[in-house]
Length: 325
Image (cartoon, rainbow, N blue to C red; front, top):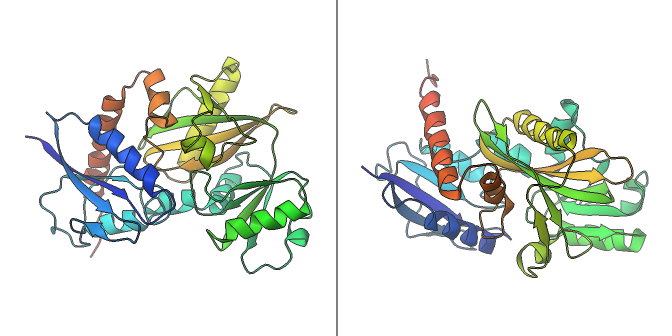
């Protein structure tokens, strides 16, 4: 009997098109002998097609498991995960807490620092903060300016002086009221895929070689000029450090299912910094999460199988928890 998988994609975020591309890649690689696909599309205004998933246990006997492929706000931030918890449906990927903490770049850094994991020096400003210069005075230029809750490098800028910093904060403020300003790191951009529930494992890491000054949205999805190296050309001890830190970050935010952890390797010091964690990484034709696992011995189709197994396993374990007296 086929497993009925509700693939949920689109969404009310700046990554709507990326989500559609990821979902199409996933559905193309789902074994039709194993799975029956039910498509749930959320448009840019937040309307569900053909119908919404209701937040009621037992309301969807036609669904065995949900595969959310929603990137960014209203999908990767714990909101949809909360809906699926209310509906009592198994779902692929991180739960509510891990999703929301990982989505918020500042909270992810706080949790990582509490676990003594290396993160880049940063300050947080808000849309209402009138004096960016004073707030960021302790950081040297260049600085990276990011909306706290967004992905795919949307709204991110590199500032080389105060004028650029103010413009970068104004841009980021269009996407979030909370903005993270980081010390710019000159070095290499690395990524590592993590898979699992209680016993997560890390893939071989990859390196991103941007065609622009940094790996921004256009470089990721429009220009098609960025290059990648899988696996990254690193000494064995650096490879193992990246893999170890990826799993430690994953555990720190209490992630389950999957995540991609992004790193910066500083050229001057050789230090590795955790940049961010993405709980629903891209699955497009150029996305590194499935590519890293392919190079680590797990094919795209087998990866989908494993993610669905992890979702069902977590849901089964949750049934042993009492929610009432």
